[in-house]
Length: 146
Image (cartoon, rainbow, N blue to C red; front, top):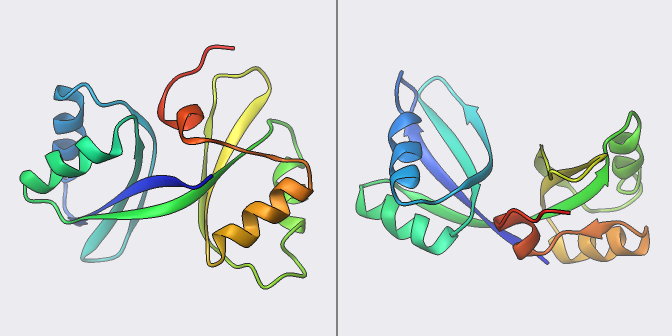
């Protein structure tokens, strides 16, 4: 239950995020969540979108360097302590969290965390054994009303 994330490498200067977001919007592609990491010279815009394949083609055609990464999205309770409980699962393992970010699911009292793990399959197994919901692509890529 890995999902695909697009990573775009952008120059670190004003206005660089606007163009890829505009291209996706004009194509009717929904950005479900994103995060931006930057250095002095460049930034990495990470996106989860409603149609990653079409997004990749569109952005590459526009001249962007796009990398596809498999990440894991986990549903958690939207309450104090949920993140700490989830992170505690990984304390005595060899599973490293390379980065993470969150977003809301539109479900009452629920949120999602996106993880890049060094061992995603082992992480998924651990999350399942703890009774956590590892989200499927359809749950993340498309809005689901519940």
